[in-house]
Length: 157
Image (cartoon, rainbow, N blue to C red; front, side, top):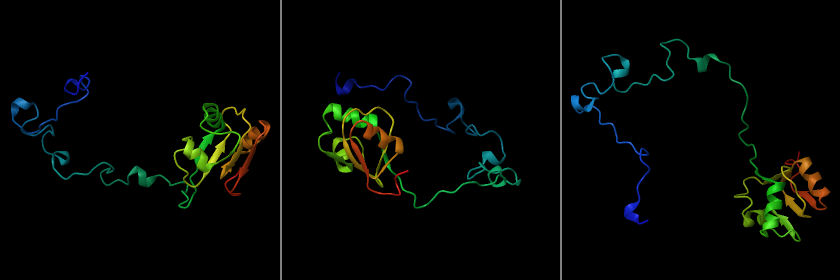
């Protein structure tokens, strides 16, 4: 295949509809907007407007609260750690900290810290040091003969 032979899939691209370009175009004269009325005019915004009646999004009660300073953790599962140890990207002999997980490519970025969850099986004996971990993840690591240290007390649940 050469560069000049590259083509998009048939039907993947569609030509732009040229509105108001005569009767032969199919959308001439009134440009597919019909006759008169608010929707035929320009500068119309009636998405949430209900003819003066109180709109539904204002009638319904608001619930919940989003904490503005909440922490966002990068999440990694035990099964993924095991996969990286098997592939040789993580050294189970040495202590594995957050920087090692990022360098190995197991986690993209640290955010407010890395939190370990217990999905998957861990058979390697690893010494992990992370910002947070679930109780079941701590148990699973200790069951495999390793240790999991949580650096921040408020992140652990």
